[in-house]
Amino acid sequence: MAGELEFMSREVVAGRLSRRDFLGRAAALGVTLASAQMLLGSAARASGPAKGGILRAGLVGGESTNSLDPATWASQVPYTFGRCWGEQLLEVSPAGEIEYRLAESYEASKDAKTWAFTTRKGVTFHNGKELTPADVVATFERHADKNSKSAALPFVQEFETIKADGDKVVITLRQPNADMPFIVSDYHLMIQPNGGKDDPTAGGTGPYKVVVNEPGVKHVGERQDGYWGAAERGHADQIEITVINDATARTASLQAGGVHIINRIEPKIVALVKRIPGVTIRNVPGKGHYVLIAHCNTAPFDNNDLRLALKYAVDREEMVAKILAGYGTVGNDTPMIKGYPLFDDDIEQRVFDPDKAKFHFKKSGHDGSILLRTSDVAFPGAVDAAQLFQASAAKCGIDVELKREPGDGYWSDVWNKQPFSMSYWTGRPTQDQVYSIAYLSKAEWNDTRFFREDFDKLIFAARGELDEAKRKVLYREAAMILRDEGGVIAPMFNNYIDATSDKVGGWVDDPNGELMGGHALTKCWLAA
Image 1: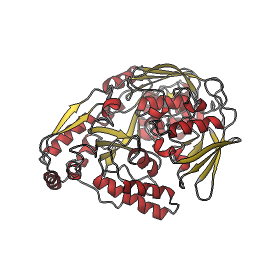
Image 2: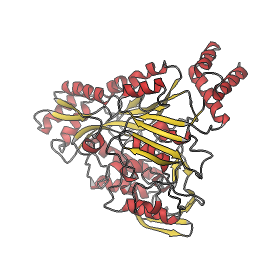
Image 3: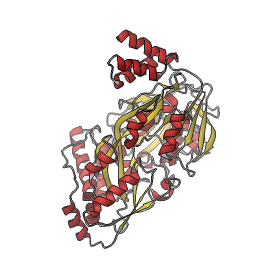
Image 4: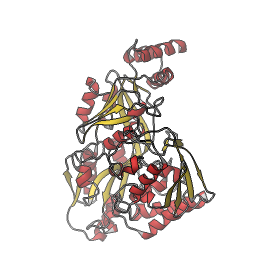
């Protein structure tokens, strides 16, 4: 039986047998769907990447305000398209390990304060200029400028000196940081010609050059001749992203063959999508989480008793069951989950508690309703989740008013602007990155306006602490402050649920983020 299945899987990859027929025959032989799909994936990888064609994706998370400037990327489309034309010094693999990209090696001083990255030779930008260490230095300098508004600013502002030394880039930190390789892997730090100082939208060194850039509508990349990593990335002649923010339209486009890949399948329709012939659900647990964010410096959310009342008024178990349909786990009002290095799992789980919610709400002295803004693009099921929160809060005597915002403009006009709204985070490889990008007082993306000097000191201390046991204690203390006094309400951690047609080969589950950590269009190919 094993030999027959292997033969049939190779026939599917070669295009001589349909995926549907293969799964049907496998089921007749008593093979589970998961095992059959795994066999197909192995066969596709063994056959090697197929070159050519146009690989199309229909994605939620694109707006008319999007920019090619990596410093500004805040949603799925610019992030995914950016991975097609740009690259960092290092990347994080699906296994959570550091992989070399534009750096071919690195070394650190014993105190983890000085780091030297050797740049890869023979790499050219899309403008024909050869990559040099000076371009890397300029990239970091641009993002480190206090006026840059870069999401990577909390990381790179800790670079005390940045200089080129032969074929190396040498960075001296203000304080030791054992996570430095993960910092330079941040997706905002795409290396650009002269660091993007001349043009912050300039093409990088990735497998595809930009040929169409219509924010909120369509993005097209054409394979870059002479791309240095062509053996493993950039298999299609072109990649194309169509912005389809409506979930129903996105699924319909995949079913009709208009696109090969879509993101953010709503958990409630996963079972229905699984029934579509020639479509595979890609379900990957990760560190992503769905949140309600309250500005700690804006009334009435500047009152911690009110924030606690809202946290106790969330029925987390109900949300995971009804919104995630089991494709995720409950959250605990911090961005941390098991899987992070040095995660402390003995922090008491917060649960729906009407009595405590009523107590803190009364103590806050607030009178009147509370306005929560939401949108279909905030996360899959965000509008339904808002309604569930409205209902559970009502049981606690809290009147929550909902305002459904349009998708276009949500990430530029609502998120990080309005005092109480719904959002999502994809997570990051390390705790330091998560806390630094969204919770340090000076972080550009501090979307809860959580300004706490004592919290900042804990993160800085943990960053420079090389003893893991001591570092874990510091992170626990930081998590407790955020959980009990912060403005983030994190009721659930979500799985990444994407879907692909049977024409897509090379898919690898990646817990770093949806769409293979943003690499689906660069690493996948048209298999049949």
